[in-house]
Every structure is written in structure tokens, then in C-alpha cells.
Amino acid sequence: MLGQENAVVIVVCGAAGTGKTSLITAIANESFPQSVPPTLPPTRIPASAVPDDVDALFVDTSSREEDKRLVLEECKNAHVVVMTYSVADPASLFYLRSQIVPSLRKWNLQLPVLLVGCKGDLRGDRAPSLEQDVSALINDFHYIETCLECSAKKLNQVQEVVHLAQKAVLHPTGPLFDTQSNQLKTRCVHALRRIFILCDQDKDGALNDHELNEFQVRCFGSPLQPEEIVGVKKVVRDKLPSGVTEDGTLTLAGFLFLHALFIERGRMETTWTVLRQFGYDNTLSLREDLVKLPFVWNPEMCVELTAQAQDFLRSKFDEFVVKFEDEKGCLTDEILEEMFSTAPCNPWVGELAVEGNWPLGMCQVDFMAHWALTTHIRPQTAFAYLLYLGYKGDASSALQVTRRRRHDRRKNRIPRTVFQCFVLGPYRSGKSAILDRLIGQPQPMHEHTAPNKEDRDRLVAGTVDQDGDKCHLILHEPRAAAAFELLSNPKHLVTADVAVLVFDSSCAKSFQLMAQQLHTLVEMQQFLPVVVVAARDDLGMSVEQKEELESLCETFNIPPAVTCSMKNGDAGGLYSRIVNVAQNPEGNIPLTASMKAAARYQAAMHNMLRYTVATTAVGVLAVAAWKVYSARKNS
Image (cartoon, rainbow, N blue to C red; front, side, top):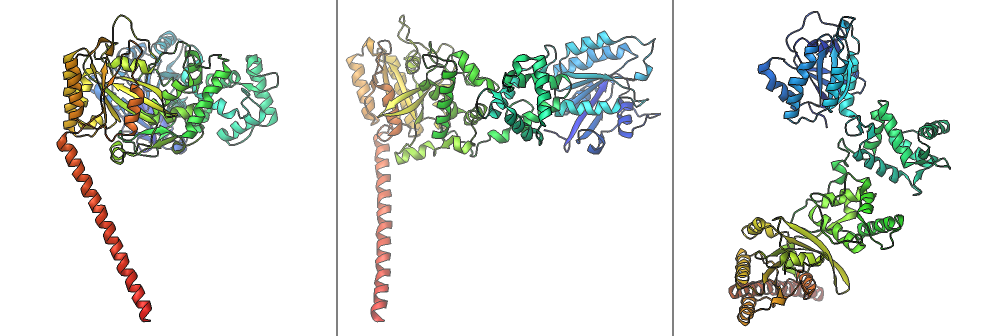
């Protein structure tokens, strides 16, 4: 977290003559300098001289206009910025509002800021009151963590500047508390809620004395005395009656109230100690080392949830269905939000937004399918969210990785239950309808297809029953530009198990475009299994078109196309066919006659080599056995 050899870098900036250099000198030497240079070189304050046991590195800055960019560069490398003004000079405060703050905003430097009024010894009856201006600046620039006045000449509050600057970095208020509303921020509430649930060992929704002491020992190394527990509960009960139950246990509301109270009283380090003991970083996400995968992930590999992780998620689904007494046995949007209230946010909103048709809520089958999708495309995110939900195992117990797809295809053995397929084809061929049907999206009656009008990639996941087993099928419909890239660079196809090529049965041009895509796939020699789909079958296919389709499949030695009409609700067994092809790629990989002959020749040579090796081994063993026999006979 810290740079400059583990020191908190503190940049001091402000108008000329506000006392920046004198402040740094007074902190470093504990004496007021009679004369100072225009600026000081970087000044290190050792950890032994400051309260937080971390070195502080003060960086003085120039107030000259020509050095303005250099000041901003220094701020970019800082952990915290100290903005100084003179309590006897209103113009110095205006300089901060008109020069420093706009520059920090322009450069989007999201750093904690301390506002320090210097030359406090000059404050007197004649000194102008700057309270309103200071308040206005604090309200206008929300990165200001705190403000104080000091006097380098009197050595008054100068050490407090160091303490507050380090505190703003090591124990920042910003991520935890909204000073304007005087409330814990949502992300902080979510983190503390997860900690509360993890500590609630008997799962009764409250912390008893034993659980409180377990929490106390984990975070602070020593238990609370009985009278201290009584005192804590009294403080909560007096201010928030719902924070303590009639049985004397601490509720979630009481737990959150205590942390808000700590922060209001300036004891941010208490809450930060708790958060860090439970693995949180300064962004209130779980630390990188906790969610790091135990393997180097390659897009050609497939990552799936283990049985242990799946059992955990099913139990979590059932827990929330029971908790909300949902008679339909589904998770509504409200329940999903509650479920993910221990995580920074709902993972299925935003970048990983999932599509589905759940008028009554998400059923368990869809829930597990979308976890399969998340794990497949973002395995580290999936594991992190398992931890947010309370999973207590490590990554190796939650995720399993298969071999590279091409290796499995060569063996014609696919021991997986999650398959990703690219759905390709001309515009308005019926691709989007295939995705919609998988997730139960109703088909529009006024047109035969639901094209991807937003020109964006679509990812949907569904569950397919295959010979009594449930498999998760991920269909990826690339936007037009992405589809072109897929077919122009073999590297883009490594994440696919099957290519689904779709065309409109009633349109000859659509068929021709699909055939071109098939030729391109074959020329790339990626040996990717293919399923050809004749969509919109309700419109009929001409005899000539059927003959061309049969000829195309025969040319490339692949099974006949699947015909379907999503408008009529007839998928033609398409999804089972896709899964079957993914599981058994042999015979579904498009090959020309020459490619097939080459493959047969390679297989024959491989078998011959195996036969030769085996024959040689048998011969060697026979000779060895004969020598042993002869030696024994002669003896």
C-alpha cells in the first residue's frame, strides 16, 4: 500500500507565505526555524517519532506559477495532501479554492486531504474570521478528511498534523463514513454485515457474549471483561433500543451502530482493524491475496465449481427462500439484493449483467446456471463472491480446472458439465431467438426473430438435461464487429467448445453467408466442432436450398443441420444436440476430404508407432527372460 520504502508520503501545498516550510521544519526538528529556504528537500520523519509507527515523508512544494505542474506531479505520487492557509490571510484560503482544488479535480486525484490553518499564533481580535470560508471549502471538496489549526512558532498542534495525515492514509474516513449524512457508507455496511454473519456462529441473527468475545480476541487479541460487555450493551441500548435483544444479545443494527459511533468519535482505526482482520483492503474489497487463484488461468481452459461449492450455493439459495418465505421457491430481485448485501455489490449487475426471464423470480436451476457462467468467464470474481457469501474453503476447494479444450478434443473425452458456444450467422438469421429460447424469454409474435439491435455481445446461460445429468450451456452471440474478429483470428476461438452456425431457412443469401463462415472456420484449422442450424423453419425451405444444405454438410463430413422454429416453440432438440456435440466432438468437426485423409494417415502412423514400440518392448522382455533362464540353467 505504501511507497517510498514504506513511508506515508505527505505533500504540503498552499499559497506563498502560509508557513509550509516552517511547518515541516517544526515537525522534523521540534523547534521553530528563524529562517527557512524557499523549499525543503523531502524530509523523512522516522516511525519512532510518530504515533502510528510508520515513517512519514514530507514533500515541500513551491508556490510559483511556473512550478504548478511539478506540484501536481508530486501530488500524484502522494498518499495524502496537506493544504495550508494562513489564519490571518483570507487570500491564502481563496488560493486553495481557486488554484489547488480545481487542479486536483482536473487530474482526478482521489486522495485524502487535510486542511491546515497555519500561523495560529497570529490569531487575535483583529484576525478575520474564516470559519464560513473554511466550512464552504470543506463542503465543496469532499476529499477533505479533517481540518485543524496549528502554530509552528509555538509548536502547537504540529505533531497532530503528522498523526492526522497518517491516519487519513492508514485509517481513512472516506470509504467508511459519509460526513454529510452522518451515516456509514453502503459498501462499509455490506462489509460489516458479512463480518457479523461470520461471527454469528449459532445463526440466530445476534451475537451472544461468547461470540462477542471470539470476535474481540480475533480482532484485538484479548477478550472483553464482563463489565465491559455490559457497558457496551448499555451504550447501544440507550441510543438504539433495537440494537440489543431482550436476551441481551447484540443485533446487526447494534453492531453497525457501534462502528458508526467509533468513527464519529474519531476512532476510525477500531473499525479498520476489524475490517483488515477479516481480509478487507482500503477499497473495502477482499484483499488480492485472499481471492488469488491457485492456478494460472488460460482462456482455453474451463473453470467449473466443485461439488462442495455447488452444495454451498444450493444451501444459500434454500436459506434465502426460507428466510423470505417465498412460496414459489424463487429469488426475486429484492431477495437477490439481500443475498448480496454482504458483498460490495450484486455481481450480476453491470459488467456481468445476466439476462433471464423470471417474472416470479430466479429458480435454483437458473441460479446455478448463472454461477456456472460467472465462474466460466470470471473465475476470480466467482471465488471472491463465494467468500462474500460466507464460503469458508479455499480456492482449490471451490474451483476445478480442466485441461485445454484442444487437448480434450483430440482425446474425444470431455469430462465437463459447462460448455460455451459461439452463436454465429448473418444478421436476422435467428441467432438472438436461440439465446432467448434457452433462458425462457418469450418470442415476439410480430416478427420471426429478435435481432441483437444494440450491437453488443450477448451471453446467456441455461441448464440442459442430458441423459439424466444437468449440464450448463453458455451461448455467446458476438456483436457484428466481434464476430468478424473471431473469424479472422484463431486465438479468439480457443474459449469455445462448439460453433453454432445459424441461417434463415427461407433466405438463400443467409445460407450463402453462413456457408462462407463455415469455410472460414475450416480454413483456420482450429478443429472446432460445429452445429449448423436452419432457423425459422416455419417459413419453409426450398428444395434447392435443402439439396445445397445436404451437400454442404456432406462436403465437410458433419451431421445434417438442425431445423427449428422458435416462433412455434420448436427448438428441434437443438440444445441437447449442442451439448452432445461438445461432449463428443469426433464426427462433428468439419473436415475436407484431404484433411480427413491426412487425419486418417496421422492416426495410422500413430497406431503403427504404438505397435512398433509395443513389439520392441515385448522383444526386449523376451530376450531378457531368455538370458535369465539360460543363466539359471547353466548354474
